[in-house]
Image 1 (cartoon, helix red, strand yellow):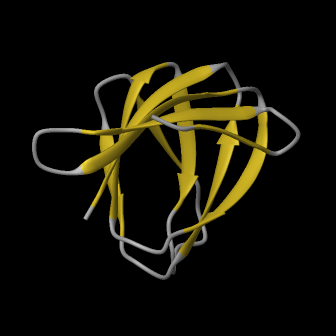
Image 2 (cartoon, helix red, strand yellow):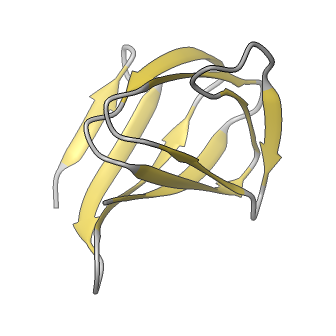
Length: 92
């Protein structure tokens, strides 16, 4: 397992290998972030809320605990985080 920090420690994740896919579980502090993907990512909000601007979209849409969204490989997406939020992400 590896521990990663991004955006001056405001985003922290721990990588793991699930039974089928590599994954990360992590937390995000309040802030605005832009992420790039190298693989397809399926992100599930565990606790809190992520406001997500997916590739090709102009609006931010809220994703709450239990919701998930997908970002294809080699894309960028933006997040606005208004409360500390936990997430689970698998990589394909």
